[in-house]
Length: 587
Image (cartoon, rainbow, N blue to C red; front, side, top):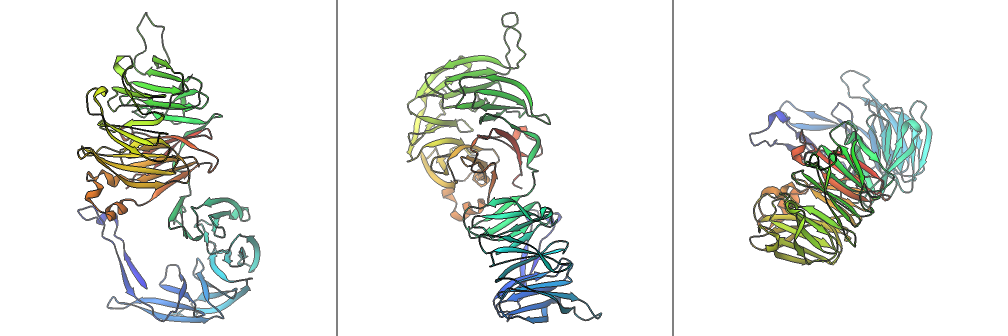
């Protein structure tokens, strides 16, 4: 089938802001047999077709005076077996054909007489050891790459048509993909990965790109080599970004100790980082590189949590069995307290008999939930006095909804507890739901609040799955609307106000899922499955030291503190690395 796409420029947007695209079948070439390969000649309307009728057809697609489209067969090349691969050279003057017998033939394809169709003449025949599955030319046409059932990649020099190298593979080689710039070659031939070879280093394998199970069957480079798309027997299209443009220059640091806690100040100017050793460091996040503003050691280390109050006035830090509340504004009374140049003033210190597991602020910075063996609700303005103790034991994570109307706790007791927190005093809170799950839940986060009475809560843990609940408080009902699988246990979650849910796991993977469709203000049960399925377009994954690193903490920078609609995410891990990643806007 010959398809004519209509892809209007952005300047031709309709008033609704939506482009009208169409893909119209303008002609059907019949009697081609089982089509196994296609290749367009560059900058022309000539198409090579390989089939299992032991033929390679070269056809010309023409448009008549009446704008109708038809095709004319220019050449019919008979072969001894199925034609599995056809490929025009980048300049369009040569055509390579590979078949199931292992015969590789290269033809000259040039215009001999003006006004006549290009002539096809044999240039070279090379016999491979088995069935040929794919043929690719290097962009400069200096090399011809051949892959097939002989368990190797064959590199052929086109100046003398000699075999320069054979690269052994574990399986058949179903595809080859040279980069547009010619510096790299991507190949199949492995079960759960594709290999990247450096052409300038004599095709040495420089990395292996992991896939989520299944055999890769096809790969394609972006026209500017910015991305590599891979498909196969794993039910996904996986796209790798090939540059480091998401990693901000000067915004990566390494420590000998594992990074276990990170948090931005509400204005985005300061980044707080907690190490497993108990060292807490504050960096200037607004400068071109990380500049240390303040550093201290708190507690015995181990389990460290850092939370900045939403109003930016105080910072809560727990490290081991020590809790410290720092004031970022007040620096002591003149004449009573020594001069303080550290920018932070210690307001409260609490020592416990066991390690603290969780802490979080209310949206208006009035209350602080602090958990050791129990969860205490502390009054920030009243010297952190305890105003309520919640009964649930073994809590690992807690948090308020963005509008402050709900408060949730999760932990090792396999229960998600959700309180109605609309009362002025925490002592008047009512338990709204107590939901049992047969797993340990390590972390939770709330989605953006769009409509009163409709909230979204995400949590994850040892079940290798991030679960999203829709909570309808006016109806006093909840519903599990989504489960996002992970390869390993989930350590941390964060959900920004644009609808991007970020998931950090034990395997060194950060997954970002766009759930902005849930900001419609309508409950999922009012819509239908297709509406939700169309909202879930893809998952972005960032990997760092895959299998050798656990993502321990991650935090979005508030959109109020970001310019140019950027989505900045800070990621810390057990590898001791902290880095800020710039992720694209949904548009």
